[in-house]
Length: 163
Image 1: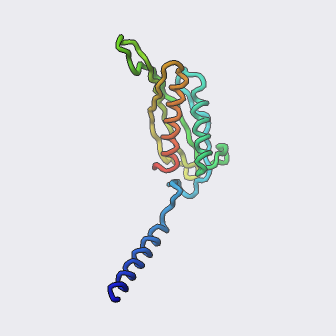
Image 2: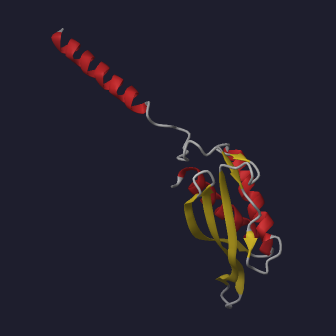
């Protein structure tokens, strides 16, 4: 009987400690400062000759932020934070070759610089340069879409929970 009582007290104490310890954690996945509730995402600057890639990437990021629902999209005048981007470079190269040494697929790579700023505290929360690629055989747009999707995932992960 005494052993059962000791086991009960031990298990009860362990459960209480676990429950109490979990109270300090957030399961939302967001590590944003508590005062940041909104974000503005101005059209990315495009330093490449690739027409429309700035709009495509900006739209993809806005859509992903909206789906994530950790931040609300707003204009720059009302935002707690701003996510700014510059498309630095887009390169194409052969991806795979046939036995005859003819390219059978191609890889397009997009390089971007992103800055996430805290407007209220007037400081950059993070600044980073990324490179992502997409592969295509017929339509280059397929490769660009893949690269944009990968970049969007990287940028959202860093913005919401990665710093």
